[in-house]
Length: 90
Image (cartoon, rainbow, N blue to C red; front, top):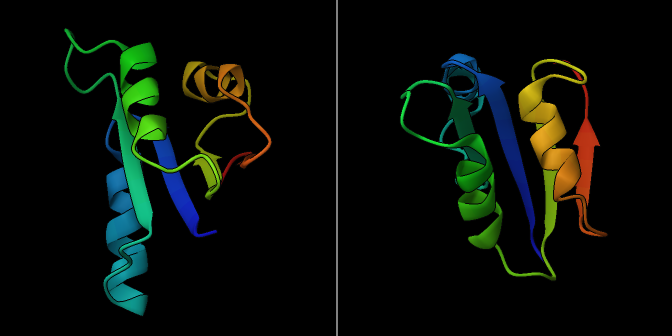
């Protein structure tokens, strides 16, 4: 079982957070980002489904979102499974 982290946010905050982490710690291949509402035609539900589908079911996903009870957070809650932990604001 492998552990993956997902930084998920409204706008590009998640990418900025990953850039800061990598500036301090170096490249982090197990940290992934989801930046919602950057492109109008991209559906958040589809983004979350596609990202979660990339990982084997036995792997652990730790999702860190920017706003408690925000739309990004709520979308991940819908996909809550035994292998996903959801942590609130950074």
